[in-house]
Image (cartoon, rainbow over all chains, first blue to last red; front, side, top):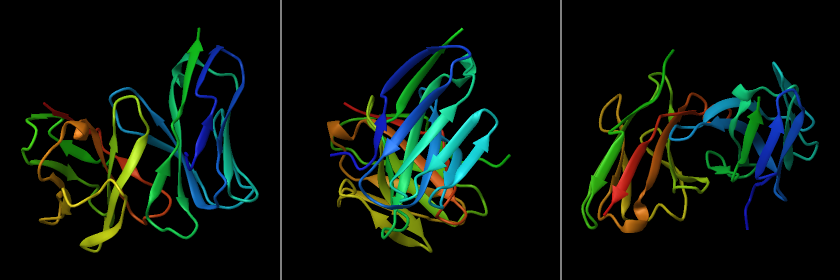
Length: 112
Length: 113
């Protein structure tokens, strides 16, 4: 059983389309982080959300933390080929400081 | 821009041999981490380190593994007697506050033959 379930696993869309990827859990997290990982490289932090209901925007990317701090979403507006990559969520459980769990990732392909 | 560095980028070793993977975290960071990623699988937490001691470790981090901060800049992961299943990408990460931002290195690809 995965602590963090990401969906969908794969997503292939045309340039200009919008998309949302999800990161869900039955556990409460003190924070959730979103990363992007290119093949053969380390994850690169995009954003951290810490407050239930929090929404953060990074250009065309919008991140939301669920009210109960059990889930998060990443919405990309007008996707571009440069958005292609593996998107990972990771979280720190409420009562387990300094130990981070990763989801399996959503592999996004944006076709020109 | 400061970054986490890791050496070597690729390490090939024979089963049963000891390996040491090295990391130089960002200089003013206080929390240090090791993760591994088996090819095609998710990133898995191994251990976190703060104030010269292990803060948390996962079930994967058994007696074959150890970490050390031998000086003010390096952070190492030692695997005492490697197994075939230790073949993976190993990532080091560091954080200023241990909560909200982790910065990952480029990884060391360990191949055990």
